[in-house]
Length: 194
Image (cartoon, rainbow, N blue to C red; front, side, top):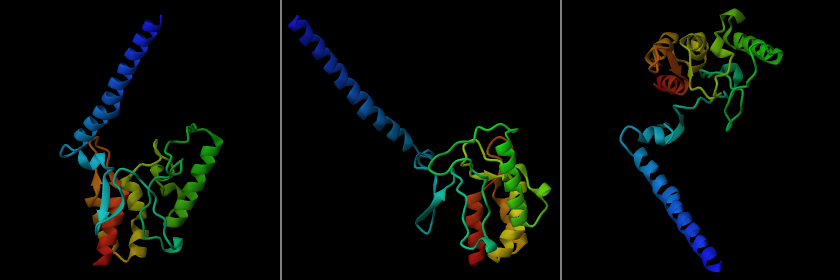
């Protein structure tokens, strides 16, 4: 009986050792090695965007910039988030939920006031959160809506701001035009520095 128990314990320890080495050492090293393949390293490292050697954000995570003076806001803004960092996720509320409808109406009124337009001119992505809550892109319509305010507060000519929107518009492979907010804000800041 004792011999059988010792044999089973020994077999269990060998299996534990094999799987510890396999899944605790070899597998993580394999994943790390794959992440070093040219073309994948940027994604594996979080697609960090740097300016003058300093990390300023990720091109894959949308974080809404906060102006020091909201009355003179020089930034393009991302879609709203139903979650706060570091969490992500949607609100999971239906389109007919009274709380969600009220929140969307509040967002629409605030954006209309900030941009100096009628609430009906505010695009849907300006007031609705993305599924992850961290979408780095906005629609071209939302970027166009913000162009006049950004130009006025950044000191960059509106025509230049609109050219930057056009230059930073991509389809992301599925044919839906979008504008990466971080990259656009950096381009506006660079244009204002000249």
